[in-house]
Amino acid sequence: MASNLATLRVTGPDGKGIVASCSNLLDRHGYGIFSTEHWTERCEDRLFLRIVFDKESSNDGKDVAAVIGDDDEEQRQEQVNNNMIKNQELETPSSATMAEQELAAFCRDRNLQFELNWRNKKPKIAIMASKSPHCVWELMLRHQAREIDCDIVAILSNHDELQPVAETFDIPYHVFPITTENKPDQEVRQLTLLRDEWNVDLVVLARYMQVLSSDFLDAFPDRTSIINIHHSFLPAFSGSRPYHAAHARGVKLIGATAHYVTPILDDGPIIEQDVISVTHRDGINGLIRKGRILERNVLVRAIQAHLDDRVILYKNKCVVFGD
Image (tube, rainbow, N blue to C red):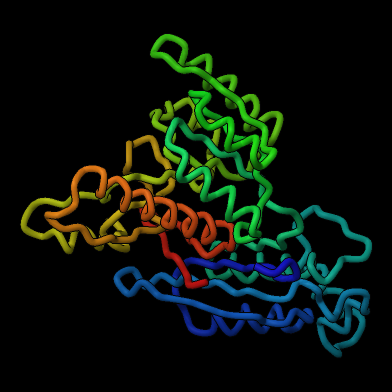
């Protein structure tokens, strides 16, 4: 996403005029709309909306009243005050502040939730991996090519095999050998770096062959803070109504799966999936080779969707808008 663009995501009960109201609100504050995409889940009549807009408002630096309208001074001031967050005092509210306050008031009235990302700083990402290098190499190369808009702060591993990859791209590499006995202590050390020292926005499990403990996951209360690539088809359905189960689960495609991590192993909301063809002629090595290509691409696309604010989480499913 271009550096001058910001994103608004809205979800909640559908209703007439929501998409137009959000777009018009941004327009009134001088923000140019770059793209709009929305979808309604008819089973629950729930709206999912994403608006990408130019965050450089043409109203910045102008009189507040010019944004609100041509009413008399007392009415204009009352409108401004009504949009202020309770108990928050601002001497000269910026267009961005006023837009966010108006969005908050509008969404409260409609029982909607919204996320407004001004993208004023690059997200910080930490990669966790074990021995397999293919996903780490792919992430490093895509990052170097500026196809992943973030800062990669470090690679954490339970082995030292991938240190040459980190050195190639001048990325700090930290080894935490893990056994059954020392795993709790090692996770505490990892969390000290991830949360306290680096304050990362996203952890990417790039074939990290360890199951994260509930204590580790609890340190990331945001359900979209950890992405994993699973080298298999998720989920596997049985019974007489597999398509109904797949719809409830949020499956995108059958193949390698990138998903957010939850306490239930391999059961997190699915962000991206893909498929690759194999035949009876493919041996084990052929399957591994094809699978690695799939894993690399699926993981990158999932991270790109996450960083572009194209994902809206609902229950145990992801709504993923186009790029």
